[in-house]
Image (cartoon, rainbow, N blue to C red; front, side, top):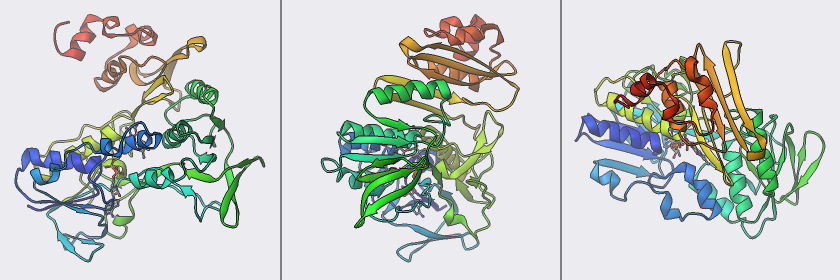
Length: 420
Ligand SMILES: Cc1cc2nc3c(=O)[nH]c(=O)nc-3n(C[C@H](O)[C@H](O)[C@H](O)COP(=O)(O)OP(=O)(O)OC[C@H]3O[C@@H](n4cnc5c(N)ncnc54)[C@H](O)[C@@H]3O)c2cc1C
């Protein structure tokens, strides 16, 4: 059996570890466009902030690949998949044969067609190389505009602010983190970041990057206002990197469609991580869930099944945990439900920046947003995953000191699978 994995992110690592649980010896080849051993992508903002060293982001040992019989082709791109021939063509002209292939190519930043975009000092923020490029600005640039107030936009903004740069964030929606947060959570964090010295502009968008002699001078907003700056970071979203499967017969929607075994529509070819559309536990449909733990898990299950184990991936729920200058936040599952079938309850103490919201459907917990106190968020995740009827104790879930003790004994037993 020969395995080939395209991409060397966390989904690829999950796959190596999944394969090796069932197949200790068959050769695995990883083709990696980035010239680095696997690193913690979410950590690049801490690196840019100067809080950690570059060596801290590499979370597997130097001999990790060798010890697992993995041939790692760094700085090499897969350029074509030939499903009939069972081969992958690589950028250096090789033909890599495979019996089982995993596509784990992640996502790529979406770049809007903005006048003035093409030229120096427009950056994205998804890779170690992006950090190295942006690092050059530190000590030189005084003002930077970040387009996009989602997870990546806010993380890069906080890092730049930490390094002494004045940051303006421009967000089209009526709140920051519009996917994971609701208006109250978004407002608590917007206010806090503004108090820390960042400018956050909502319901506005960048319409032009103004250059003089090639150098960035300002960004013009859709309301006609202008923000002077010397550089721009575009962070308005990441889209599944599916270009490699065009013309292969592998079915795609937004991402590459996978079945319960993470296999694509072409037998023997699997997909996992930010590039894949897989089962979503809450919506009961396939969708891209671009978060780190999900990418690992999907990769691991792809690995099990590539090695012949036939173990179904039970699906995931979206979840994010981020701290903004001392205010911790968590969002789990459906934080902004659409439709009438949901019951939404919340508790908000503005003076303490404390907020808890729960979303119920048919008495089952479907989502939660926590700001200020996030302890025991794992219990809420457990209630969602175990499909526990929360009707009799739903008010308890809103208490800021909520814990297992607030749950009825029979629920505790079910959650812990031991006697309380
Ligand atoms: C700044 C930032 C902060 C984040 N913070 C969080 C967080 O707090 N929590 C969280 O859960 N998630 C976070 N994420 C998301 C998380 O990092 C991703 O969900 C995860 O990295 C996806 O892993 P992956 O293996 O699917 O893809 P990736 O990590 O994107 O890896 C894919 C790899 O494939 C390579 N590749 C692509 N095409 C080819 C090709 N043709 N040939 C060879 N190689 C190729 C790419 O270069 C890349 O190295 C963050 C992401 C970013 C960018």
